[in-house]
Image (cartoon, rainbow, N blue to C red; front, side, top):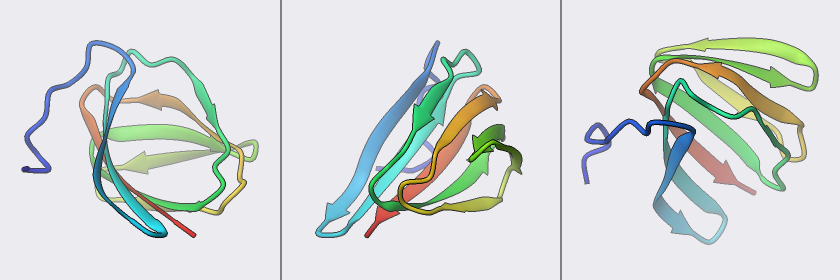
Length: 97
């Protein structure tokens, strides 16, 4: 599998688990600009890398803009949601305990 070979969904996002073992999970996320605002609170820590595109998230009431190449650490049990994202944004999310 090539991380950069993907189709852009017409709406929402596509989540593909690339690797999972014990306390770690690596997920590729491909975003459409036509998203439904989703709220997340996860039981594990997460680090996201935005490999392509731009995105605006809200984390515990504060807006955070991510640009290509930036990363963000989201501690376990932290309220966050995706507010806006560019079409074809490519994420790599690492979930761990």
